[in-house]
Length: 118
Image (cartoon, rainbow, N blue to C red; front, side):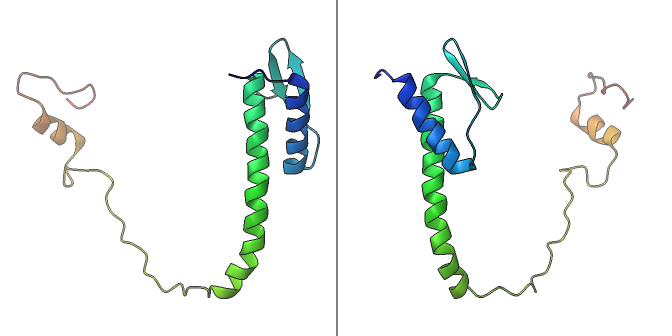
């Protein structure tokens, strides 16, 4: 693992944060830890990864915003004539039986049903 320069990592993170959110972050520094905007404490390596992710998100959003208008012009809106799916029962098994009947069928004769089903 390479040694990270604290000042360089903080400067890169601050620049990426400003580009992503439009404001400067509130970095609170504790011995060995950093807190961004009063959030969870993170180490210097995690701060570097977070700054890189903000830079990567900014690059992907910039490329998708350029591609969006062209895609919107080409794609025609789909008609909303599709039928809604039929509601299905979320409970599996039982076929309309009560909970006590289902438990009675599952358990052996030597076992007792759960409390409230006797």
